[in-house]
Amino acid sequence: MTSPVLSSSAPAQAPVVRVEGLWSVFGKGENAFAVHQDLELEVERGEMLSIVGGSGTGKTVLLRQMLGLLQPSKGRVEVLGRPAAEMGREGAASRVGMLFQHGALFSAFNVLDNIAFALHEQGSLPADLVRDAAMVKLQMVGLKPEHAVRMPADLSGGMIKRVALARALIMDPPLLLLDEPTAGLDPTSADEFCALLRELHAALGLTLVMVTHDLDTLFALSSRVAVLAEKKVLVTGAPREVAAYDHPFVETFFRGERGRRAMAPLSSGQAAGET
Ligand SMILES: Nc1ncnc2c1ncn2[C@@H]1O[C@H](COP(=O)(O)OP(=O)(O)OP(=O)(O)O)[C@@H](O)[C@H]1O
Image (tube, rainbow, N blue to C red; front, side, top):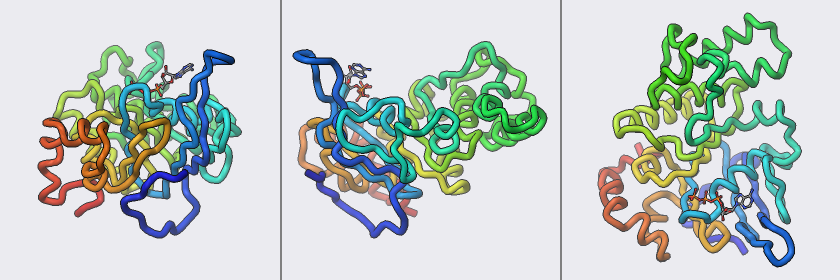
């Protein structure tokens, strides 16, 4: 059964992500439990989609399905027209970039080597070209050439996120997945990081799919929101439409005090995609 769609426009091209009838089941026999049951979701090219839902509703599992790190127990997860689970490691980096919640940098590598990692592993370019490509990405995320030789332990939280973002984009993937992109950042750094993501989204024509609990990030970055509840995508739509949907999770998440505060700027039309 498909979830209610509160707003839609005719897709110009095939979806970047197509999830059809997805079941994600863990455990065996009597201990088996389904996290997703018949979950449906499509993400169109250029969208900025936020996935929200209560704790344990399977948001991270869904990102892992899109990355091809998990196999559907039933159903299909396609990324750019191919089953996500069939992407090889190298293919994955050029198709899907992933920004992990805490950056997940290699602590023994400097900034430049972290950024260059996937390109270096691929082994198709000489070392100086890999270095040049990594320097381009370093500057694209607002870091300076002198940051290239710093070690992760010497970086601020905002800089770690930027390095992780540059690393996710090293192979120019059209799709970027983000797990709690602003977690652990102070409000100013979080706003700056959202602004950077919006710039890169526009400049590179990226499709963004993110999981976030942070309402400021959600309203700054989402053209559409998908709510995960009851093992499926309960509803999708523009942020303010979803915020008005009648469901206990939506009520608490969007219409509690935090939600009302984050939505205040919306009355003056400042949501992502509303200029
Ligand atoms: N590899 C695994 N093996 C067994 N169970 C798993 C595995 N990965 C996830 N789960 C279970 O799947 C459920 C959903 O987990 P998931 O991490 O996707 O939740 P979430 O929506 O991201 O939650 P949160 O907002 O708390 O991070 C949880 O019950 C979790 O314990």
